[in-house]
Length: 227
Length: 383
Image (tube, chains in turn blue, yellow):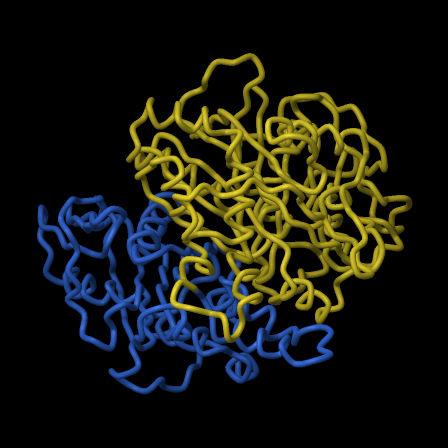
């Protein structure tokens, strides 16, 4: 018996407008940064989580827009002390932990950052966590970056629930096969977005099949394998 | 199931380090065990600053930031051990895990807004340091960064053990690293958590934290090297408070649950643990909640220390920094003093001392707690 996603949901901006979010309290929604709202939406759509469900969050830069708003505040003369809400909202794991706090989450919560291989590294951590702790939610999300940080892309977020005891088993391996992005222009370059194609593959994958997920070091790629 | 992983080498670079790079770990630890603080006053604040960083080699220039330099300088003395692990296990079987809360924010804030250019991702990105380390040591296993604020580099121990126990890697190089930056200082200022004096963890008159920068690195492997003084990660526990983004619950329930998880994982009872290295930042609410939690799990007899008065609160680096100090405590069978501590609150009955004390035992626990109520307890064993 293996670990396989039993629920998954992805959202990106050009696909649909962000609907109202009920997984966050009203005050939390009011204060929430854009990335927190994206994460909350996909966590809600995938069915939410129990108080002890392990959560793995993956993002390259986290809430970079909040960080830049703090830098803007600092650039103003005479600022002594930043906004506590924005400062605590700028830490990397804030999107997932905000949803966690709103829902009295008491379980394990981890937050990953990586490079182009973000989706593979977050998924790897989530598979290992599910092996250790049981059913695990992984949330992979990236908001649009400031121009100096690289490619222009639209925001993307996805949540998957990895459940042990399934007929199929998901594993990841490095491969010498190069990665070629199948993503449309608006998502290409978003390091979270390769997970969207993987979700399509989950539906049909048979034992022995593989899917080239994302780039790895030295021109290689990370490959998802159905065992 | 016992899932020990073995510590082959470690290195520390923090405010108490002095002398040449070959001596940076020993000098840092000697100062801590001799009760000498590395905090210095800068612009009306006490800061734990690291001096004399090693210049980056040309091959690593694309990563050139103060965080990259601190990472490189921390790891340099471990080069031989890392090379040995690479030869033993193969480059693809050695993983790299970095724990950081600030990443390259110091670089970004110094270039904001007009000097930010196309290379900003490789300077700022939290994953960049993990890639730099792979390049530096020619490693090719999984490499990623964990960023859960002040528990970041404690969380990487759990991930390292998963990588080894699930046969994805045979060795994992861990680095906790964070550099001083204005944004962090201003952020804690805004929260009203910065002390203008030297921090006084667990003291009745404590009034906040001092920020420090540091790098702490450990090489964890599947097999024990066999040297006389060797150590293992014996237990890992992690849980969330589910209470508030910046404050712990007053009863320390999440912290207590985390410590119990670590004990369960290590298959130990509280009386087996010789000492506890607390998170102990010196803020009113955090120290109160933590001492309540320690009392509820370990009672009042276990020797407890906070080392934040030596290094400052090194944020994302404090997990590995405290791990190394904990391991050194087992090695020396001595616990550093909680510098700055004089008198506890009436309700706090935990056993603290401003001076080093002797300990006796094989196991030590180390706490790291963070924003979002993200808690980790590590338990180390002297083999």
